[in-house]
Each structure stands twice: as structure tokens, then as C-alpha cells.
Image (cartoon, rainbow, N blue to C red; front, top):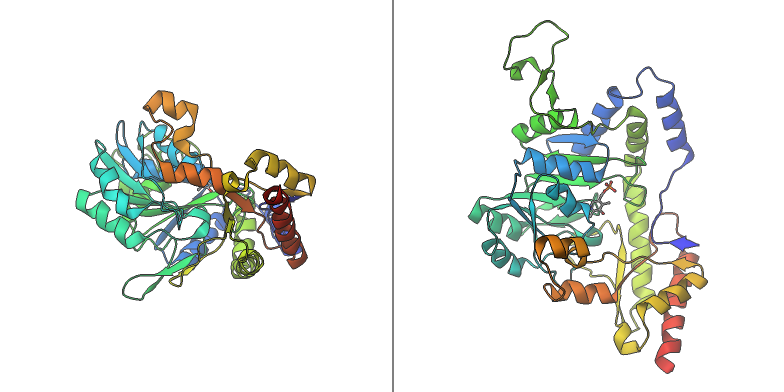
Length: 393
Ligand SMILES: *Cc1c(COP(=O)(O)O)cnc(C)c1O
């Protein structure tokens, strides 16, 4: 069965993990720090903190930014739940801005209104859907007008690139237009540590807060002690937090995976180009957005299909594809449609029409480095064939 995403773990990855397992320190050793340094080098950010997952990275970023009870975060309804739930843990309020029907990212022309309409705005949280970077310059501009943080959920976009209006190229995570960017190393993401996440920033104060928040809220840095130092063993509680560390074994995998990230992304781009060629003649399928000012790392390959016009339900068609050995995925159920979000925050169906229309039409096709050209062709063929039977009927 083909699925929409999967990891690429090779022999040298396995060797790197074994070697970490045989070393003195399984956690809090040198590999954690090394992985952080390499991620700084790769993204271009000054500081990086790696942690146990993308979700804990989001929590840490929100908490380091000072998000508190009733502070609002403004984000897209079309994202994974933890973009929002990580803020809810801190008492944060979710506020949504509808998506642009072309890019599937937050529509920056609606962003100002979304910010103005919310009480106590704290941060704007752009999520680069599928790997396509959001309009960061415009996002920063709106945030600065109100004195808000910009925290990127970059979980889809490690390795994505784009250029600004001055023609300067940026990598997602360089934080040129944001305060922090968050990444995940779940197996379906660009590179994996099995479970793992990271935050990048250029702000030293945020960095030091992230460090102690990752580690129970404890500092061992004598420059930040408030009380007197009892001895070389001294540590001090700054504020109670959790253990969100990642192990050296996981980082060993991450370090080795990062060496191959360009090869992984190249392959994802080849697959995207192939889908585009194979599907572009079919007017009832809208392929993923391509833009000249962007290099998409293609975490996903989303297509839009007008099921209503074709006259088949998405559910029925999904099963037909599964019977042909292709398990597609849908990204995502818009967050405001979750029953919990409706009873707790009063969202309703119809609040974000572009996101809802996108949800009715979107499917994510298989895309990952190990997928072969023949498999891509098979997926495209089955997609067209199954849909055609319903159109003829
Ligand atoms: C994967 C993902 C997360 C969560 O990352 P985990 O490592 O699974 O906790 C958050 N946001 C988005 C957009 C993601 O794709």
C-alpha cells in the first residue's frame, strides 16, 4: 500500500544510531548540541534548540514568547491541531484567518482584519502549507503595526526557500521576518529523528528562555542565578516547566539525515514536477501551486478535485483508491470545524469558507524520496481513471 509520506532511513543512518547507542551518553551529550549547530548552519539562524517533538517545540516557542491566559494567536484553520493546542495549554485563544485559495496559506490581505478583530493579540503564526512559504514580509509588517510576535510553524518547510522584494533569498527558519520558527522531525517530514522538533531564533533572550523551558525550567548558567551559588553542582529553578529534551540517539539520526536533505528535497521536487506533467491536462484536477520566487521543499503534494462537479463523494472515491493500493490523506480538517473548538470557542461552519472549500476538495498524493517514477505514474493513472468513470456516468 502506498501512503502519502514515509521516512528514508538508510544503512549509514542505522550505523550512526548504533554508534550513539554505544557511546557514554545516551542523552544530554554532544550530539544534541552538534545537531543544533548544524541546523543553525542550514537555516541561517543564530540559535537553535532541539526538543522532543514539533508539538513541544510549538509549546516552547509560545511560552518563551510570553503567551499567557487570553492572549490570542492568529493562524490558519488549515494546519495540524498542535499549532493551536500548544497555545491552548498556556491559556491562549485561537483566532483564525482564512486561506488564500491559490497558495493554501493564510491570506495576508485578510490578516489585518483578523488581528484587529481579536482581543489581546499576541502572535501571528504562519504555517507554510505543504512547504510553500507564506508571505513573510507582509506578515511581519502587520505584526509590527500591532507589536506582535511572528512564530512560524515551519513543520512542512524545512529546506524551503524564497526571495524577498529586494531579491534576497531566504530559507525557512532563518527568522529574517519572524521571532522564531518551529520544525518537526516526525518520519513523514523532510528529515526525521523518529520523534523530534526544533526552534530556531536570532534572539538571545528567547534562546536562553527556550533552553531552560526545555529542561524543567532549570538553569545551570551561573550568570542567571538569582540566589547564591552553593557550589559547582548548583542549579536554580526559574519557572516550573517540563522535560522536553530529545536524546543523543535521536540526534545521531537527525545529524546524519541532515547531510542528505538536499538529495531528499531534489527527489521531492522531481516527483512534484512529474505529477504536474501527468495531471495538468485534466481540468478537474488542480495541481499544487508553483511560484517563481519560491523553492518548495514539498512536504506534501496537495491537489484539489471538484468532487461535487464530477458527481462522486470524496469518501467513496477514497475507498476506490485504497482498493487500488493507494492510501491518500487529507490535510487537514479545518480546526474550527472540530466539535471541541466549536463548543469551547464558538466557531461555526461557514466561518472560513475558503478553508472549508479546500477541505472538500483537497487530497495529498504520495510524495517521499523513495517513491519511484513508476509509482508516481501509477498514482496519476489511477487518479484519472477512477475519476473518469464517475464523470462518464
Ligand atoms: C507535524 C506537524 C506538527 C507537529 O509535529 P510533531 O513532531 O508530530 O509533534 C505541527 N504542525 C504541523 C503543521 C505539522 O505538520
